[in-house]
Image (cartoon, rainbow, N blue to C red; front, top):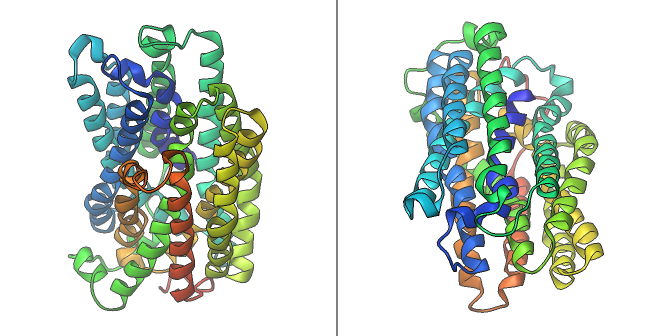
Length: 414
């Protein structure tokens, strides 16, 4: 849980903590849309790096062990986060500043892609079969918790520090505080795994695969990867269309940073206690049935809520209530995803299978800033995220409809 908390804290640093200070990395005179696009590109770089990390470290996790792999990747994203915290801005080194930021986020994504590829199977291979849905949701509860913590930290800093303009206190050094905290948390994960975490007993006893990727992309396992790709694409599309764009998009529409952060915070705080119930529902009724319901909500209800928030972007209530509920509908997908993916792959390729099935679907949705720009040729830019949100709901429905119910599978015999 703590490892995944650090993972998601690091992922959303740019879209929450850095978004109000993006002018520090932008050329003078940049428009609101240009700065929002840069923010989204920084976020997307991390998501693009994750599948590469899943491939590299997924194979490593299956061949040399979950624990060793987690130690390597934890050290990697600790260094990347620390370097970002000391980066100079555009005024100091020009276009090299955003370029280095994007590059470090890309490398960060590679290591983060390896973190859950190794650590999550290690945790789930100790979970009792009848409690796997709840355990998976508790593991991923680090996601909304991280989102809540980083949002509160950003709100406090924005209230204490001047935040208007590229030379403001928040833009120059205030945003570095959440990154410095992320560095400390990442170092703690590295130290904890190094000192205290044993290797997975299932991995220790299994026959090791010399070529886990070859096994993964052949036979029945290839179908599992395909189904996971459909569901995962839906999950990432809905996430990018809400959490990914929320801070920068509504800031560009004239919403105050306080209201935007409050909406994100409310959604995250509601998701934390909701995750175990959604996980339990997946265990009782089946993961695919829960995905079907969530997909339908994101196809129909989510776009209506997000549209209301966009229409009332300069008012508090629409952004806070409608926007917050739209965020919540996309967050709860992640309460079910880990158990769903773990059950698809046998122990000898579970690290590779889980990591790639979790990360690979993020690539196409990661370019959402450019999809929004393309859609703006046919509709108002403000409403373009609604299309991606509905499309994500369709992918969730399609992938889960074709999936089998595997909640009773014993991971020890899979």
